[in-house]
Image (cartoon, rainbow, N blue to C red; front, side):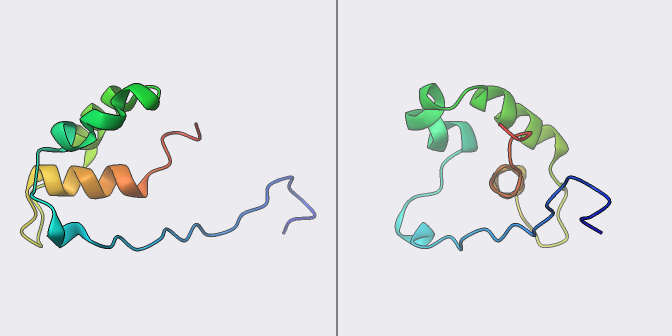
Length: 79
């Protein structure tokens, strides 16, 4: 298929998240506050994640938890 396109499609493998149980749960925006100034449009990505995430969740996740996973699993529009 690659000979017909100029796109190299490789599945993205994200690293697992470790150590999350050793820290208190915070609202998504508050948890990301230390890095908001370092990532362009992070505030906008947080708003999008909260509005586009899968909620209500059949797994009992809160909107904040679901938005966190959404934000972790997306690539920020290729930026």
